[in-house]
Length: 173
Image (cartoon, rainbow, N blue to C red):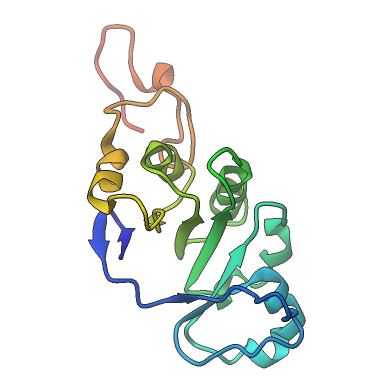
């Protein structure tokens, strides 16, 4: 189960993670809806180009720029959070949405907790795979922890002080 577009849905995608003896070059990519590591995409790009249902996941120490010419090839792009305190995935998501114009599903995977959900959606994530040891219903509530935001981001292009007139009347985003 994952959270997608603020709803809990079945996850019909498989995330490919390399086993200890596998390399990006020699790993066999199974058929079906599969999300491969960026390094597998880079090594096996020519063999994978014809796949209709293909996703890629980016590790927190990898650069989204490596995908900017191939974004239209992926139904889903996932960003891996190896641990809760590693915030580099926020920047990766922001770059994919704001700088590179990616419009497909952007999924947070790995050590994803409720406390992150609201902020993850602000930078462009629309799908979340919370840690399996956590309650997904509780994680879903994390998307609505706050009713207003001050800063500009992917979800709100203007900061609050520009969205509200001095007399208190809101202006359009």
